[in-house]
Image (cartoon, rainbow over all chains, first blue to last red; front, side, top):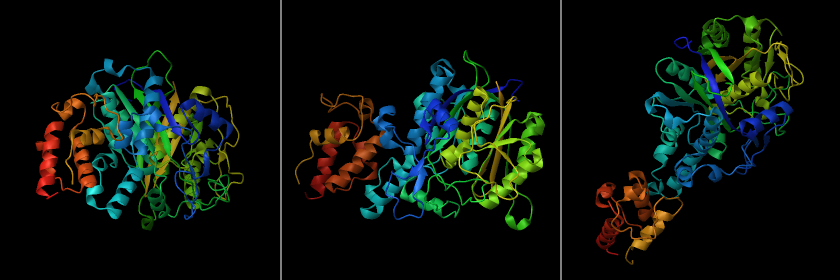
Length: 402
Length: 84
């Protein structure tokens, strides 16, 4: 809790392969409409992975001033658009708030990959004087936070969390800490955009991307045919504050915890189970109080099993609804967990659990009540979002109905 | 190599960016920051001059170029030193 005042999510902005705008995303998620297709941002033919979740049907320069577009990476462009929607959605007049009490904390993972790749090409093909000055501010992880802070005059304690796919939850965890100590509004969440040759090749090195060429058959978390995941771009920006506005908030943040996997050689179990338990403790709730789990859904068989086992250990096998709408977008790295939070908030608002599209046969050991068609349960009070980032980052966030 | 003119500079200032100031007017003696170009923007223009005209623009050139008129003067001095 934050000095006895609840942390509320009062605005959402989404830029995702499922749609630009929270409504478009929600409609696509309910309908199971996938945003994964053959990559168009560059020619993927020479690469083992040729499909991804791209943000399309949207011209950045229609929404972001050209000067800012030329000085920043696509990942920042997407965040600027999402933030505009979130702030508008929250109905907040930032200029009316004390500038040092409003802050920005985002999640980043790849940084300015596409921008950096082009600068490196100029460096190698032409020479050092061809690297432009904006490389210095476009690539680094805090660039999006910085640009949002400048654009909206938010001078409070700003920052960035880098936990790969888990970072989006960690950013909200940090937002919550700030809201407990003098900050009255935080723009949070995150985006990612590394669908360029450099970005793709970097991700390929993890060995966790599926090389199945069929957009409908590549990313099947918890399924017997799981073969890895599909990359995507985009994410969500969320407005978090401690007072409600005229409009009903989407959700309350009830609990949060983070951890890190031990080294595989230690024989100790992964962090996820403990992180879930500590999140519930933080919320002062029990497993019976959780009505749906938004899974991390790595799509990599041994990681799916580890997640299913952690969920099973806390809740009991098939005792809680589990869903992963991220099969429609791919994993969005720095933007992934933020998008899951947005989807979970929409789930609580609308009272419908969106489906997990793709998986048809659960892998042995994955004893989950996986939601494969939209479900309207009689009780939908809370949603637990899980996220694991490459290397061992682990986080969980519990949302409750407003 | 011919002279570097105020119009050449105008073209670089305009290129690829939206600027609030009216660049067609008498901008020669207006400070860059008043025209809407911060230090990074001026550094970037210096880089473009270097790439396009092949002169080496030193890192401390910023202090020599507070206005378009001073920038044009400075660049032409560089051209002369380069024996252009």
